Amino acid sequence: MSKIVIGVDIAKKKFDVASLNEGKYKHQTFTNDEPGYAGFIIWIVHLFANDKPLICREATGAYSIPLADFMVSQGYPVRVVNPAKITAFAKSELSRAKTDKADAKLIARYASIIQPPLWTPPSHNIRVLQAWVRRVEHLLEMIQRERNRLETSDITVVDSLNAVLATLETELEATRKAIREHIDNDPELKCRGDLLITIPGIADASIAHFLVVLSEHHGFISAKPVVAFAGLAPALRQSGQWSGKTHIAKSGEAVTLLCVRLCIGPLSRLGNITLSSANFASVLKPTARTVKPLFVPLGVSLFILALPS
Image (cartoon, rainbow, N blue to C red):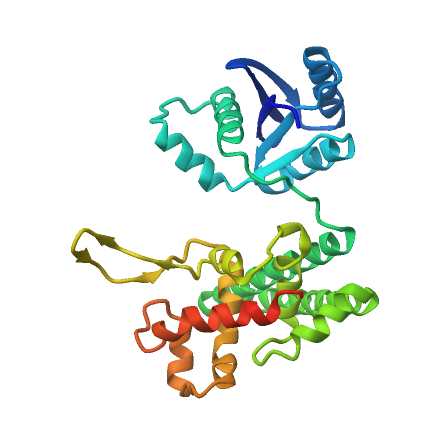
């Protein structure tokens, strides 16, 4: 693999790139569209001929995915990094500058020193499922907002709010049906879904989310990295002879953590642990003392059962 690294800082309409080769930087800006991607390739070839440098970018969602897909399709190695890691790396350097150009250089340095794993694009069936799952999340948010407005609204707009709620709930049901059909029509997803449904506490909504989270493109080979991804890893506090309270990190992916919380009650009955209805309600509260000792081990057990073999 080439020792040349290119850091990419992506925004909605443009992206900045900075190549790092033998301690020297080259910077350029391109539009975040297909002509910009083509111009990026021309710039790379002009600088490095047939060498294919490593491309590193932050995981910034929809704005960055098309470029990453394009670069992989052109045969370039791509690495996608959690923005929190880049931020922590910048703090370790005591970086003060915060510009697109400086960020691109920072990402290039990070990739050169840390060498994160290569990014594997998700398969088409996972991307479709992910889009449907996100749509369900958005519809639920909109329904909750309309319900909140209904509680405090003037009587003159109640009919309008109810009409919008009815439309949103109809669309939510149609979307959930589309998810079920997508899973049933895909042999791989159906096989994994049939295994997941055997885990107590997991239903259709959780299955769809776990199928996305535990898909092969994330590269999870054991429960340990999934636990960290979900924010279930314990945060130890110890220095010298002092030892503080250990708590759950809660710094992972929020929806995954919520799914685990909802599954923990039924999952606890796999062993000799039983949770009363009051304690199960407290599972949803991160400060609940009664279930904290159970939360992490049960979450780990869930992921061990849910990970594809």
